[in-house]
Image (cartoon, rainbow, N blue to C red; front, side):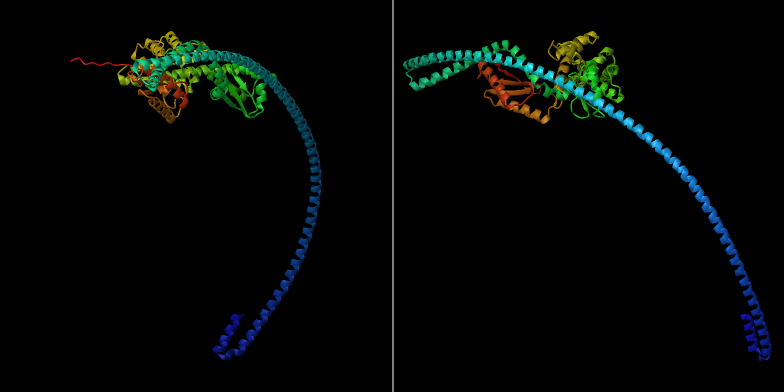
Length: 564
């Protein structure tokens, strides 16, 4: 329409002649357009009417569908509600059954627990009875000791009376000596024309010298007589000291500890009326200590091998859970067989490590068993290997047979594997074992020589003895700090050198012996004896040391003359 108008206007502006014609045409076009517009409006109204009718129809259908869906949902909800009620009733019945079953189970557990507690109380009562019997035995031993102390007191009283008698005799001798002294003074004044003071000084000097010599002789006689009767008393003193100090001194080396998964297992280890613990102790030969310490059991025995067998067996029984006398004997026997195999294998490995393939197979057991022996806290197998290596190295440096020295070092302490079982010196027991299984003569000589049971017939035997002393005396081998070891040796030598007439001193044998060299021209034998006693007393007073220290005083005269 706008294009037509623009065309007409342009035509009007182009030439004003056709203005009227254009106006007619415009009006005609406008009328046509108005008619078309009216048709469109009428068509729009028809469409809107149809749309309204269609919307009403759809609305009614939707309402019907909603009603149908609501009814269907209500019906399904009723069905589901009935099903839920049925399931709820079923679940309720199941829960009641489970609760009733759980209550019965809990009741049984409580009854078992009460029964177990009663058994534990019975066991505790038995333990208390056992402890009461032990206390009664200890009281009996104490009464026995009191009787012995009373006997000792009577002996001491007797000795005191003898000492008083000796003192009386000594006083009488002093009075006689005093009268002799006065007579001697008068004689000296008469013969030498001395004053009383000069004579007294001379007399005192001579009397002092004579008294010292007489005292030294008397001391030696008394000491020799005391040595004859001292052995019995010394043994009794040692046994008493060991009995008193054994619990404190050996706890670290005579017990093993087994960890328990829980404290409840102790009752099962003890067993009804203690039958399990008795069976275990009978089978292993150890003491099983079950006390109030939580989650552990202590195994006590002086035999490390038995203690190790008992420990392994108890750990297996705890892991298995079946603990009764039959099972205990079965497990202990199996562990013993395995331990025998382990000991033999350990002995064989030790021989191969040292380069010996011709050792009798039966000796493997004795060598491996040394791993379960200790000497002054030093493992005997490790000590044996160390001696073998030291002896071999010294032999190689001296041009001797290295293999002979090493073999002697390996076998030198083999008797310790069974010496505690058969008795006797371990060197002699070891020599018998070596002879039985065909060891060479130089090995037997090394075994016997390292403790002085026979003279050395081979130089390798001397090297074995030296290596044994080196291994035992090595600082740290037997739980001694290096600096304290050095300080003790220096202190011992300083004490000895502080005495008059001592020329030289040497602390040897790892401080277990002191050699003192004195001037033979200035000291007599009796004076050297007195000096030795004084040195020993001074060392006892001022030095702390394990075992004992032997003081050896050497007094010798040397005369040298040169022939020209």
